[in-house]
Length: 105
Image (cartoon, rainbow, N blue to C red):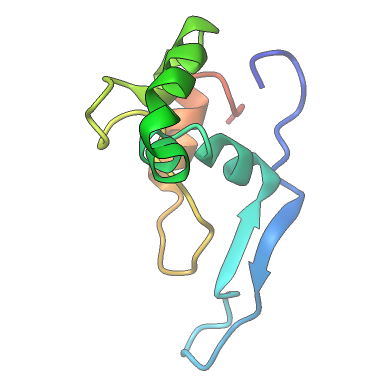
């Protein structure tokens, strides 16, 4: 991570075993790294805090983490959320994390 600590990618916090589908991949396996950083997403903040979201987003940006939000009001930019579901592609989130210094390739 940017502060010098290790990403928490080996600690799984959201897990659901494989279901009845054809693959053997767990239905969900989300790391603590993705769970925590996903909470900095603008849509997630707006969903959780409603009218108070703007103040929280302003604080995130003022602390130097504006890359998580991207352009305020554009919910499609910033860090992509990866929930760890087996039908989700982790590549966009991994690429974003590497590009912004939150994960070492």
